[in-house]
Image 1 (cartoon, rainbow, N blue to C red):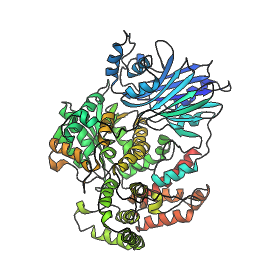
Image 2: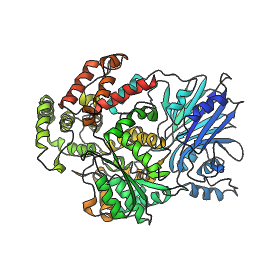
Image 3: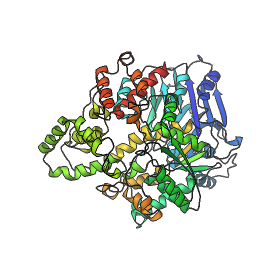
Image 4: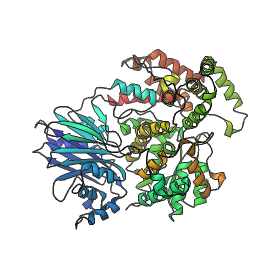
Length: 636
């Protein structure tokens, strides 16, 4: 895993040697083992690279790397899991003398026989690739299919600059720091900023499954897509007549065999949930005793470490656990602005950073269960959608609107306080966290007319909590048909929430600790297989990820398998009322809110008072706001 950066200018205004060193050096955390630069003054282009050595630890793997014919120069971030197969394929075409045993050199050799797009289609793995073509005087950039590896870029008629992280582009003398108001709205509404936008108006993110071609002579670029999920795939037939569970297990085992290979120690994150437990179980089935890592919490409502420990003991892993205290979390919060470069509103960034830090003390690579929820329906909204669209056709629209109106007008404060009271005497497993939030969600979505509207409403903080933005309205398309393919909701999560929230969170938190994370679920074969399954084959009335549960039932005792999804959250609602209260109230004071013309202070104040008083749990909209306000202070 590495950091990449580059710059092209159309005149000799900047000293490219100084500029490339400046924008590359800030990526040293992504690649502490080596830093390299390449400058071509005749074309006014420079590439930079920071290396975290995973395969071939020798200097032969250092970058930027040149092809043997000197046509191409590459700065590459990622892992190509099928590079050995591709290497063998190339050897049937020519007698190649290899300088290294890296996947980087294989990519360069592929370009001697295939176009850039053809090469991308052959690659299986996670990557952000930059390649300069000396013959055509053009730059190629590409991002992997799921968006595991980041790639930012900025351009005008005088320059083009790109990097793994926004902090590199900010170091450039060309950088423009005008804030994108659309991105601020996106952050508050969703908790993250969706590609292709970034927090800055003139800086973009390359979207997953896309590549960019920059023409140096024209100082212009075009973006093309090289991969889409194939919903008409005959993959199910190709795999054979085995059961869905057998097919998934076989694909995962093949994925693990490739992803467990490295010239450095490899471990696995173990949360105690379905996805990570399955990854660990299948790894032990391969005859490997992995190191496993878990974060625990003082608050039992968020602590899954006991479940993880039982699974680790049953599978006899080399288990490591760490308990996150509120004091430790508070000390981490100021670091988040530098780690994420732009405001990021997913509070699980804190335990993700810490587990990466703990793991890095023992390994250089760790596997995660990311992608399982998006492929197989693991979120509560997938189950809610299944229930809603199964029964809504039997309930007249007018009646649903009436129920929605009644719930919205109901006294949320009293119902929340009453529920908090009775939750103290009912069994823990039946207690719902954020009860008032769930009531409001039901009220907002019960009368929707289609899955698109459902998804936008159930994932919109603005709709659920109120519009704190100035001069921003949100509109929805209306749908007349209730019969809709619920796989659409998984598609939306895969293409937005997964790359822009989950994978962004994991990449920045892990790379801040020089740790590489690999996601076995994001194997292309498994992605396409999962999306060609029917929704009902993945999600039942009360449970999602049915095939994964069935596989795990064969590998672990039923009592060890997690029943309820808790996510990787922290007790944020309580921390905002207690340990984080002074910090929060300073950030959202009238003075700090009114300094920029983004938010309506009165609405912000109302949401804060509701949360402090226990009327509603408003942390889902307050945290992105606090992260933005904190980022503004750091930015300045």
